[in-house]
Length: 234
Image 1 (tube, rainbow, N blue to C red):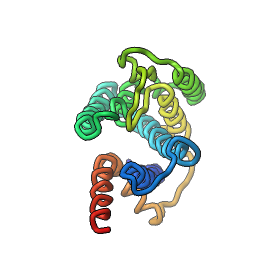
Image 2 (cartoon, rainbow, N blue to C red):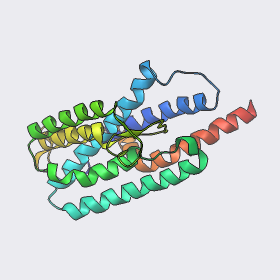
Image 3 (cartoon, rainbow, N blue to C red):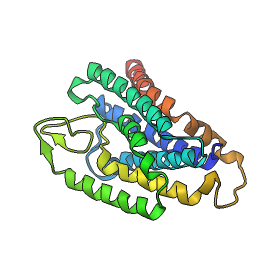
Image 4 (spheres, helix red, strand yellow):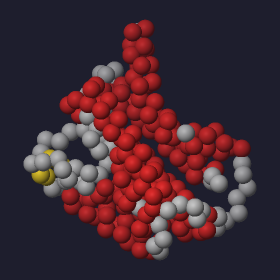
């Protein structure tokens, strides 16, 4: 059973992501000049990612509460997502070797899916507490560097590290735990705590949200192609 409001929330994040990446690509190609390192343009993509990851946590809770999922299911699901992340790593290494994606949001969600299983049956209060600790630890690790890349997944960066996309386990696993806590509280036993009348207004966003991974994989090549085509026409 899918919950339309969650798909719609994910769909809204997808549209916001496309808007951000359109401006990002325009800046990358020199068509416009914006400061992506501070202010609104720094906050905007992190807010979008927070929504994606939070909803991913809710989805993990819902799949567990359906009663049909065991650890093997989460492990296989996580491996598949991480495998997609490895493909993204290879593609970005070919086209942008100076900033290729080594541990982006898809890598993270893959690992987080596997790590989430022990937390799915814990209380919402415990998951919120652990989520806050994850975020605090992640902010502390921002100032920690190492001469090797082996702890990049955790949040320890090598010196002079630069990448297009980076979502380490700390602090971002905190958003997964918040999502699991919200899912356990608001959707106990795979049911809403509140009555909700299905509305057609959510349908377009819900459709987008239900295909978020495919859109994520395809939208950047399409955006770059359109920008290139537009520049040639101009």
